[in-house]
Length: 65
Image 1 (cartoon, rainbow, N blue to C red):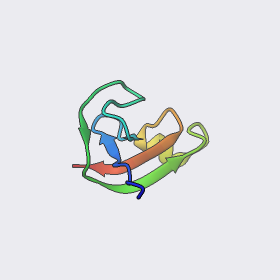
Image 2: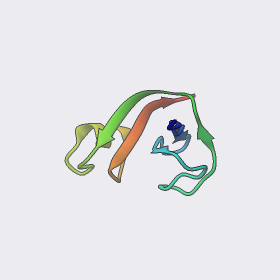
Image 3: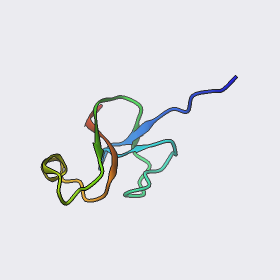
């Protein structure tokens, strides 16, 4: 049986991770409660990335509880 890995979201930058530390900003203030998903491939050319102030590509939550 394969167990699903739990996603966490950084409260500071809102990036998704499976780890207990954010790979983007290296903090441990993570949440398992989030809403919305934005996948950013090209942060420089994305209007959504500019609005959310995202500088690196990846998966991000829109809201974090």
